[in-house]
Length: 153
Image (cartoon, rainbow, N blue to C red):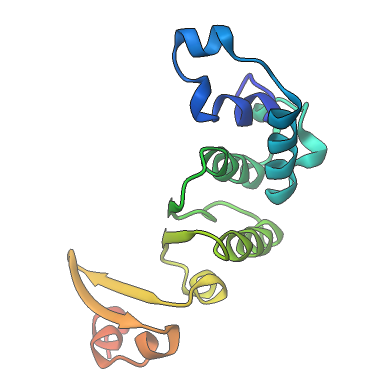
């Protein structure tokens, strides 16, 4: 939290890990461009020099997503990414995840079905560690097993 947004994104670059890599690392124009591109994508371009400890809860979540994007991951695993966020931050996070999903695979674990509806093309419902239902949000919501287990009908 003592590092700036820019510094947090920078240390996420895979080549920076390790003592020698850190010593030999140079902030090239290409690195700065990559940081700015990701910061723009995660809605933090105007906060690059701000200490991450001063960011809102939602902005901190976006920074963590950005740090994963800096690593070039093709798959992002997100556990309750909007927990504790304001309604506006939740909307912005949904927009962010929809844009990321155009080029990457996302696995999002969340109990907020309204949020899941806003981002998911396919939903998997687990119950007691086992697959209960899988399909579109409409298919899952209409599945009698899901209704029985989660709605008690």
